[in-house]
Every structure is written in C-alpha cells, then in structure tokens.
Image (cartoon, rainbow, N blue to C red; front, side, top):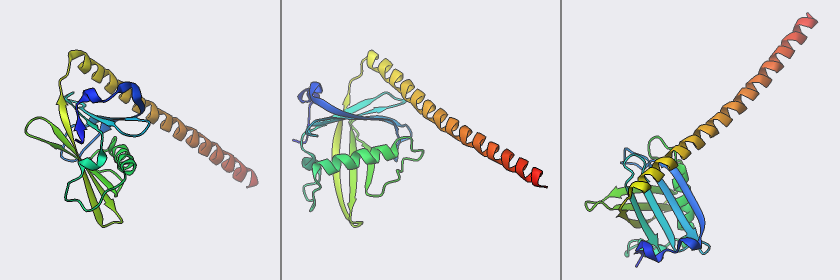
Length: 195
C-alpha cells in the first residue's frame, strides 16, 4: 500500500527535512507550507502540506513511490529521481506569484477532493515527450489549537527569513551603487583635471 497511517513513520529516523514556506500551486488562491521528511534511505517519506491562510493540514506517508503511479503507466522513474524532481518543483513554486514554476520537466498540481483530502500530482516529462504521473493522496489532519499557534509562528519566521534575504540583496546592491558612484566621481575628477 503506497500511503500509510502517520503512526508507521518513525520521526526519530528522519535524516532530511526540506521545508518550503510559500508554495503556490495552480488552481489555489492561498499559498502552502510544504515539508518533506526523509530517512537516510529516502523511504519512507512524509509529505506534509498546510494552508498558510486556512492552517488546514494534510499529510501522507509514502513507503513505495512506484505504487503511486497509475497501474496502466508504461514507464517508471527511480524513486530517488521522483523525490529529487518533487523537491526541485517545490523549490521552483516557492514564492511563485502565479503557481507556475520555472522548470519544465516536473509540474505539480494540488487537487482537492470532496471528502476534504488532497491529492498531490507529480507530472514528470522525460525526453520532452514521455510523461509519467505520480499521485500522492494526502489525508486531512485534525489540528489542535497549539498547532495553529505553531503554524502562525512558523509563518512569521519564514516572513522574517524572506525579509532578511531581501535586505541582504539591497545592501549588496547599495554597496555596488556606492562603488559605481565612487568610480564615476573619480572619472569625472580625472576628466576635469585633464581639461
């Protein structure tokens, strides 16, 4: 079975955590906090998604990547390649304004189902012609009040990190501008002294 209950995932075995704070999926107005937790062997992997506005949460535990592709699919992609493509696509969609990332070989879609659950669709394109789909069913999680507070704190931390990164970029730009002004002033002074 591709997706199992959360109890089968051992948090103490988690080796890698990738978290993206503002993932924008096509067909959704709100952005999402997406977290991938992996063990040293890559599998099992926990995929957790949380709405940044709604604070609703979904998750699935994946124990077999290949069990998440359609049975009639002619092709399969190695599990590590699927996970890496998923991370690349999430990174591309993080802070995206329109929900369309900048990579062509992996597109993501987050579909809502009538029962309140979600499906994460990973569409891989190989050799510009072959498409392989993987579908991960995410179960809605019950949320405690403390989890909502933690989510808000995490959102604020992500916002502060983004603002700090923008400030560093502006400081670098400001230093470059100061150097350019210094160079222009020096060139103007040299030209004036030659006249």
